[in-house]
Length: 74
Image 1: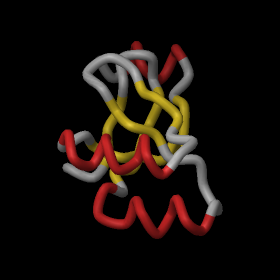
Image 2: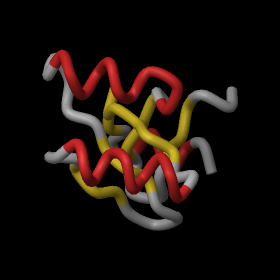
Image 3: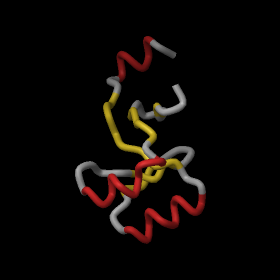
């Protein structure tokens, strides 16, 4: 599932890079730039454009796994 990313902290993200500009314009969902070990909330079009130019994945948070689930599935 290349369109789902799960961080070591248990955050579950859906990759929306292809539709990031439309999502940002709509304001319907918070979008994030995903790094190797963190994420950054995208608040400006300039940030979004730089993230896309850099080749970063743009994501929306869809869930957070609790500790017991994460430990069971390691």
